[in-house]
Every structure is written in structure tokens, then in C-alpha cells.
Amino acid sequence: MIVIGASAGGVEALRTLVHRLPADLAAPIAVVLHVGTQSILPELLAAAGPLPACHPKDGETLRPGTLYVAPPGKHLLVHDHHLMLRRGARENLARPAIDPLFRSAACSFGGGTIGVVLTGALNDGTAGLVAIKRCGGIAIVQDPAEADFPEMPLSALRHVVVDACLTIAEIADELVLRAAEPPRPTPPIPMDVRLEAAIAAQEHATMSSEAKLGTPAPFTCPDCQGPLWEIADAAMLRYRCHVGHAYTADTMLEAQAEEAEAILWKLLRARQQRAELARRMAEREDEEPALAARFRARAQEYDEDAELVRRMLMGRTGHFDEAGLAETGEG
Image 1 (cartoon, rainbow, N blue to C red):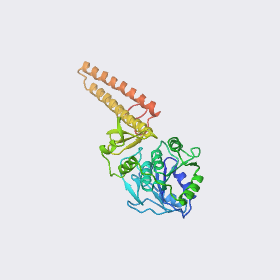
Image 2: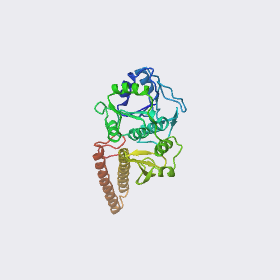
Image 3: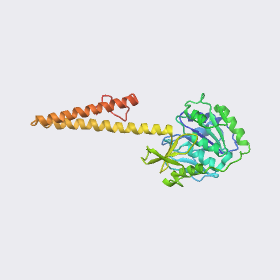
Image 4: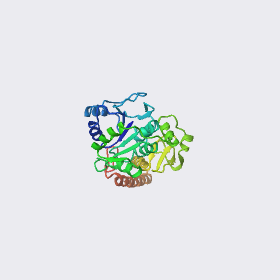
């Protein structure tokens, strides 16, 4: 079983890879690319090489020499020789995510699993590649010097003892050779790998299940604001919440940054609106000069608060985007 994960820059990397694969490849391939609400990746990959490609149906049987592409909004998982589609919690800010696919394949195929991490930002795929190695499988990483976005390959190389770090062309040749070989021996599948695979499959998603994986952390989940557990993973720092959202430390920082920025935008709008309301109240108090002055003073305070928040946002983003307000701070 070959499983491949990619993110930014992944479309061209995958097209180049499948172009070099033969029609008689001796293993099925499951692919996760971080996508939005729509995807024509199966059509692009089928046109790029001789292998058929599709968005699989839930329960579909794996066939050698076929590319199975995770559809938008669903995790693609492996169970024995079948595929599962689950709309579970996001992992590493993504659904579909790479780690759930890699773990599930490792649980089902053990030493017969070949995991490939290609170009992408942040580090989705690293924890899954660790799981593949722990289950006896093979880890292959794209050469970061060739990747359009080297962060994912670099993370994998930093945390995993990989079997090969190759260019896309070399990866294709390596997959053909590895797929034709007998699978490696499979050790007992670690219970924590099984449990995380079951959580992604929505078979377990309770606090008691999560507690078996680690210890309570002093943070809340950026997605659901529930409590987080720090995963007992020797390779890298990771977190999970009681409903199944999962993060590496890097994606936690990214998620917290997005959450903080959203709070700042709301605070900016609130202070600007309060300033405008105070000014309008002042205008209606013509017969009460003292009261009007107090409203104008409040408006000035709110304007100063809004300016402070605006400068904080400018420091974070360097500009105001379409989701925010004008650079002047005016509503």
C-alpha cells in the first residue's frame, strides 16, 4: 500500500510523479492533498499518467495500480483492503489531512506500507510517517531542495529516520521497485497508533480515549475550545482535544495566531462602533452640554482603543485585508 501526502505545490509534484509510474504498478496508491471545497485532482492525475484515478466511495475495495484521491471535506482512511471516508475532526487544520491516512494504512498494512511526504507548508504527514515506521513500513521524503514548499519534507527529515530522500523522478522509480518487493515484517501495531486511527474513523472520540494518549495540557482547542491533551510522542510535540481535533506544536501556533487575529478584528469593530454611537449620542444632547461633553470624551477613548488595536493588527498582517476594515480604521 502506497500512501502519499502533499500540500502547497502538491498538484504539480503529484502530476510529475504519476507521469513516471507504470500502468502495471503492483500496489494501490492513496493520496491526500490539502484542498478547498472542490477538487479536480483525480482528472488531473489520470491525464498525467497511465494510472486511473478517482475520488473513492466509502467502503471501496483497493485495487493495485489505482490512484485514490481524498475528496474535499473528508478524511481518507484505510481499513484492511477497503477505503473509508469520514467527516471527522480536522487534524493539523486540514480535512482531508495526511496523518490520519498514514496511520490507518500503517495499522492495516504494517510493514507493507510505503509513506511518501511531498512539498507542503507546516508539518502534516510527519506524525503519520512516524507511525508508518513504528509499524515496520517504509518512509520516503521529497528532497527539500526540489520542493516548492520545503517545510513538510524538512519536518519529516527532522523527526523521522527515513528510508530515502529523493527527487520526484527518483521517488517514482523507488516506488516501482519497493512495490514489487515482499513487504517488510510487521511488528505488533502500537496501541496508541491504533487508538488515533480509531479516533479518525470516529470509532472512539471521548475524553477517556484521549486521556490514554497523553496528559492534560494548559491550552484549549482552537477549533472547539475544549480541553487539550499533550500526546505522549517521542518524535514531536502534539495535541488532541476530546472531540478529535489534532495539532502538532507548529499547527497549534498557527491556529492560535488565527484565533488571536479574529479576536482582534472583533475588538476593533466593537470599539469603532462604540465610538460612533457615543458621537451620535453627543449630537443629540444639545440642551445638555456637560452630558454631550462626556459622550464626546467616551468617543475619544474608544477611538484611541481602536487605534491601538489597529496598530496591533497592522503589526501582525502588514495590511488590512478584505475581511477587515479600511486602513484608516473607519467603518
